[in-house]
Every structure is written in C-alpha cells, then in structure tokens.
Length: 76
Image (cartoon, rainbow, N blue to C red; front, side, top):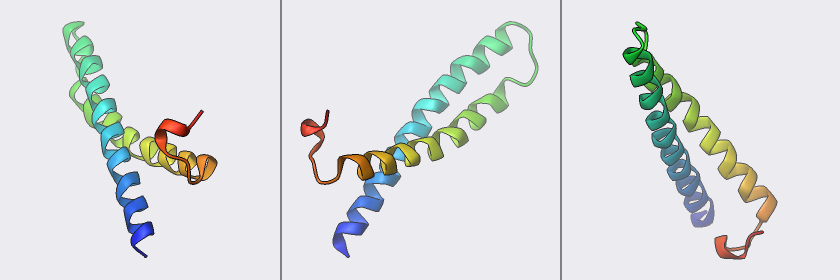
C-alpha cells in the first residue's frame, strides 16, 4: 500500500508543478492581452492553471505506465 501512496503523491506533485508552469504561461498571455487593450485577460491565468493540472497528471500516469520500474535517470 505504501508504494501506491508514494506514486499518487508523486503524480499529484507533478500535476501541481505543471499547473504552476501553465499558470505562469497564462500570466504572460494575460499580460499581453491586457497590454493590447483586451478585457478578459485575468481569467486566462486560472484557465491555464486548471488545464495544466490534468495535463500534468496524465503525463505522470503515462510516464509511470511506459517506463515501469526504471529510475528517472535510466529513462530514454
């Protein structure tokens, strides 16, 4: 059971990292929209963060399935 909890925690951490990175991209896009005179730029930050979380979780799951028991430095 400990092995599954560790995998779930790792997937959650990866998803949060991706959400933060995508939120950063959303911030840059929101600033560009606001600088050009657009009106809905602030919602872009949350949208990108919300989309980044499941993308990071999916990446983590696919990586775990395809690479099996290899360590990160042993992956191709």
